[in-house]
Length: 332
Picture 1: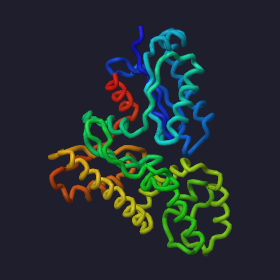
Picture 2 (picture 1 turned 180 degrees about the horizontal axis):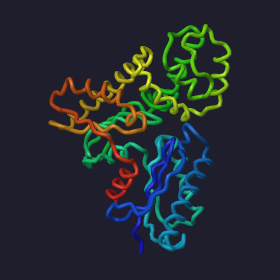
Picture 3 (picture 1 turned 180 degrees about the vertical axis):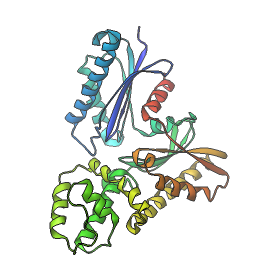
Picture 4 (picture 1 turned 90 degrees about the vertical axis):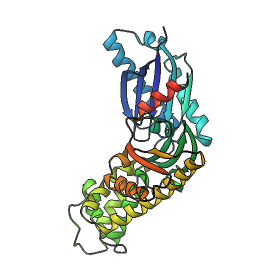
């Protein structure tokens, strides 16, 4: 009897693969590393992340139920995967990589591939299908969604062209501010000590002479081989510097806030053209947004000032794998 959906949420910094029953209940789930081919790895690495995480999931469920891998796979009727950045020219490459990973298990069920946007929004606790998604994770995008359909999207351009407010963008801005401080051409900032401490380079350069040539050389060496997705590790330092009253961190917050406010207001106008009035959700998603109260508070306060005909009710998304499962169930 085929009664499971194989649901997958594959992001740049982490992934989750789960077995979901026809009622949307999670039977088993397994977490793994990230696998975004745009910012972290080549296709072979992507396939390995999927196959290794799925193998662990099947082993875990098999151990608990005493079912063989073949018996578990025979009960899966379809796979539904959301992959960060799976759109445009890269979509067929991701599709092919996923199909290859599933062939490793001799899977016989069909595969549906979507990007991360709708699952991130669908994971809202109210299970609303209309509203605005503000996502700041490894990447960043803002979307207007009506009845589960994206009608307007801003950014999501990748770390080279955009993703302003994302962990990748913010991490790079923090590293640049730190480097400018050490070089003596930028203002002093609390971000510098925080970055250096996180890299185990130094403990305090607050009053050190500038340019701090030796420390700067160590910083260059530490970050020169990092992939873009790894820059997200520095994003949480921003809120810490904000709490210390750091001016550079505040400027970064102001720029990020302005970017999201412009995008959200554009999305609000798109909803109004669809005759959406009264109240609708503003769903925050992504690791940066979820872990940055300063960013959410600044943006929420700004968009609340001009309610107009459509008030936005801020809320946090739940685990994106919940949204993948919900989206899969709507596609029956």
